Image (cartoon, rainbow, N blue to C red):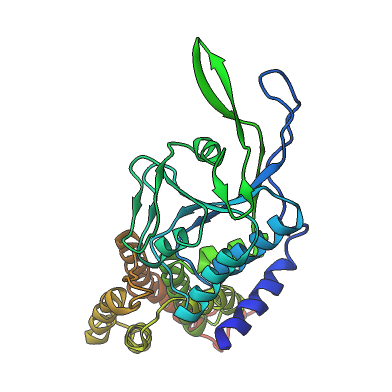
Length: 355
């Protein structure tokens, strides 16, 4: 309940900063020519990348509803996902939605090098057509025959003559090119997108971005605490921590990992107050390194971890802040408070020259 409420709140707040951010077809209508005949209907395409979270689940549901409403011949999900972090009940609801719609559903794992691992592979189950690009990997949870389709256009062509829940589709025609017959699409491909706010939240809910935003927010709070900056650092910290908390709620966050981040912040604050890096700074560094390993647990069938570049960047940046940057700020503030504008001690009297 908390995660859902936070999602809706952030979605509404982010939407205020974007105008016209609703789902919209991104494909352009081309002029009909002999080489590009007038399309006979259209197929919607939704791109799904990254972990399948509540934002992605809502986007898929919206795409299905949109395909039902605009008379699309089919809905294709272009998939590249390492797994899912939603609860099993939510995943079951998503699969049931794909299975119950009257619009034919296709899933294409692409482009080359894409993957559908762990629970993400389950999306291939309740579909009419399944395809993969060369070099794409699909987990064991996938069900049904998977066709080889190097490009999205090739996958659209595979729908031609396919028997789907809506009957046999007509999506391609045979043409002669250089004396060789080939099939080309005769339908318009429309790319549909989630609202801008939803895409922003999906990006922030990735393990790397969540971890970096969390450390940035904690570091900015320490900066505000020890520099007395008038609230600017604290305000920026809030903008970092709110999406970080959303990411922590979406991902399988372990309390131990979150506690280690808190211990790292406390350790840094202790030695900053003392004015020198000592044992608590070492504790802070070790806690932060350990948190990168245990912060996230397993999603649906697979582990969720912070990529090592983000781990190195986050820990290095935080330690440089508390070991180098913040001590310099504290020293400069202390020096400014210990002397007057001309370098004299505060409150000292300046003797006027005798006449």
